[in-house]
Image (cartoon, rainbow, N blue to C red; front, side, top):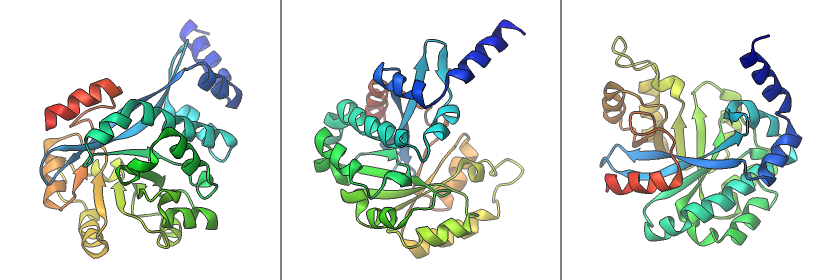
Length: 262
């Protein structure tokens, strides 16, 4: 076995709930921020906080460790750590810029249990609730407690975003239709269909109708080209994220980036 394969195998074996708990205790996790840009007036309006894990063997891709936490006590521990870290890194910035926001990905299984409101209160974010967005995945099905929490802003009065929207998971959307959503984030798989060969994929007309009838704010994920940006703006998508604007960056770099867009 090649040495690189040995390292990959050792890392894969070490990624488990216990190593994640140890990583949290040892300060191995950190946040990066993915800017959100308004397509209406071409300015940065906030960012999405993304968790990262740096081990002695290297960076662990989120797709490898986040699924291990789903529907386990770790999902709460990680979410609460993110809230604390956002408060420490971005709290002063949010207070200085009341028109800006930070969004946090939240597993639906911890909504309605009181933990988010408790941690946000201890972290000093309750006063900033109008500037906070809780993102839940289209693929997640909330239980009754979670639905109630979504309908009262997670217990804080924050805005709720439906993440990874693909316009296909009809069963889950039927449940989420009972929730008071404020934002829909269109998955990068939809945006990637806008190519030089396909300027107007079939989903665009349906999305335009959804935006007009629902009053929801629409955010496109995964924007990488000038053409995609122009098509989305023409379809009245209000905001976007993606490498066209910026990759996820540390807090200090985001503050510089934000100032450059002002």
